[in-house]
Length: 385
Ligand SMILES: [Zn+2]
Image (cartoon, rainbow, N blue to C red; front, side, top):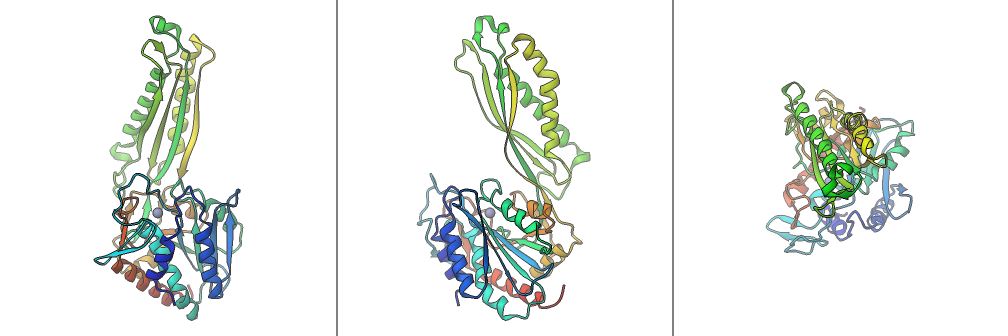
């Protein structure tokens, strides 16, 4: 029988940085499960260079619990590691390696628990899902959810094993990233009014976004479950112009909206589009018809909040022994699972404080605690839901 630690060693050795294929890792998991008598389904991307893995243990039918994790990790480029990132190194009760916390540690515990689940008289199905391309905008899991939501039977609860130090987390904000391109009209800066200054119009759009952000931060929209307790809007990238004596004919900027579950990021975008359409474009076109403002989606995922009274929240409280429900600042695939009709909670070993950093690690104690939590889950699943 493979321990979670031994499995973690294997999983960390696959370089599954999001830009790489994850097929070697998926093949390893598929072979491991197949040898235990569990059949797997793979859902590939269009290029067939990556895949999600789905498997079911125990009885067929509706309901049951899904355990979900992503196989990809963030890059180590430019990071100063004191240990090899794609190998497991133990030091003083900590296991170092890229993905140990985010989130191969959880996947290792789940795989190590499979023989135990198989040995139990499960009264409900146990679903396993391993995705790709989570770190680049929760992209991969969408195709898996398309397949799963087309089926009559659905898991009743999903546990997303992102690192929360095994604390029960019920939600996080959603995110929308957008690129805006302003196409102006160039001219010699001595005749500035004859041109359309793309940077200045971009500045007006960015200012409009700042005003929107201020409005959404007003006390009546705040929600103390989140930190900061309101939807935030910010511009993170801007590029434009050639030289000071040329009126710039192009400017692009990227902005993001991080929304509370009750706010709609698309509404922020629609409001900006209306402002562009009705206020700015008429002024730009009055000078030059060949000017434009265009918007391109960059990435998005929905917010998550699962009610305290839900079956998912009650189960995770039981498993963790804690009702100190909280939210996290980072995004997960949970919002997409919830949209697909599978209520989610977030709970996994390790800390996000170590995620995405050099010398990422997970404490051995956290792996052991996750092994124990999964045994409690197996016992709970022997009773009908
Ligand atoms: Zn993660």
